[in-house]
Each structure stands twice: as C-alpha cells, then as structure tokens.
Length: 252
Image (cartoon, rainbow, N blue to C red):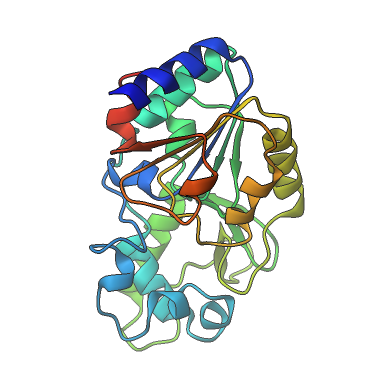
C-alpha cells in the first residue's frame, strides 16, 4: 500500500513526531467507542450517555452515574494493542515527542509511553471531592462493588464510592461534559503540535471540540490522518490512511 510506505518513510526521516489519538486507538483493545455504530451512543439506557457523563448529572444523580461508569468505563483486562506499543517504541527511539489522547483508559502508559497528555483525564486517577485523597483504579472498582452490596438499588449511595478518610464522594479524574479541559495540558498539547515535523492523527473523527481544534495549530506539511472512515478534515491532510490503526502501525 503506497500510503503505508509514505508514512513509513516520513516516520523514518523524522525525530519530531507527535501523535494525537481518539477512541479508535483503543477499540482494538476492547474499549468501546462512544460514537461508533456499536458504541455507547447507540446503546439504550434510561438517559443518553451525553447526559450521564455530564457534571450536572454526576452531582444530581451520582448513583445512576456510577452504575453506567461501572458497566462501561471501569473495564478490567484491556491490553495495549499494536498502535500503543509502536508509539511507545517510537518514543524510546527518540522519534516521537508526545502522545496526545482523548482516551481515559491509561493504555498508552501501560504500553510504556511516558509523555502522554490526557485531554479528558483518566479512570486510573480518582479523588475525594472534599479532602482530595487519591484512589487508583483498583481501589475505586473495589469501593463501587462494596457500595453496591451495602446499599440497595434506588438508594442515593448505591454504587457511590466514599472516601475512607472523610466519607465524602470520590470523583474520577475524568473531564465530564460541562467541565473545561485542563489548561496546562491543553497548552502543552498546542506547543507540541505547533512544533511538530510530522503530526499523526489516528482513531478520531475530529468532531469533539475543543480537542479537535488542535489540528489548527499544526503548520507543517506532513499531516497524517489514520482512520477507518472518512473525517471532515481529510481534505486538509497531506496523507490519509484508511484502516485499523493497530494494523497500520504494525507495518511501520
């Protein structure tokens, strides 16, 4: 495939690559894509996922939020795929400067990537809303399970994890709808993209703002879009590669 060969050559020639990825990077690891045909947005719940994953809903219906969160976002056993592993390898080789991700699963770090900018936070980090005590993924999963056994369905605290120190509700360090992105993370992402020689965007439809607007900061001539389907930004790309991102990256 000519596109793969071109991408391979650009990667070989550059020591200043930045990768910007979305949900499609993790679907090959078994993490559901919110917006794909089989993703969370096409499944049936009492409330739409956009509503459940909002700040207002979290504050008002915390138990309902955690029911959804436990079923769909606290996913154990997911392993990095070929894309995650290749990106970590490129970073170790000094070619890739940063991974910027919209995903919240922590798979890039699990694969070995070190400079990972998580635009939407991570399920691996959770904090008490009152005393800010930290809880990792395993602790929050255990607490949600515990709260589901000690409280009856319909109870306000059903499935709601509570802080051991002060008893307040624990909140995942995930950017919900109605919440702003972390400015320091966003600023670093802009800087990396603006200075990149090669910008590879993969597994994202580029429709979620403000993250999708990051493409505007790239001024180079090696903008690569790797995605299964067409995006609204394809015409801006210098190279478009159609395919599963893990399969594409395994050929680099």
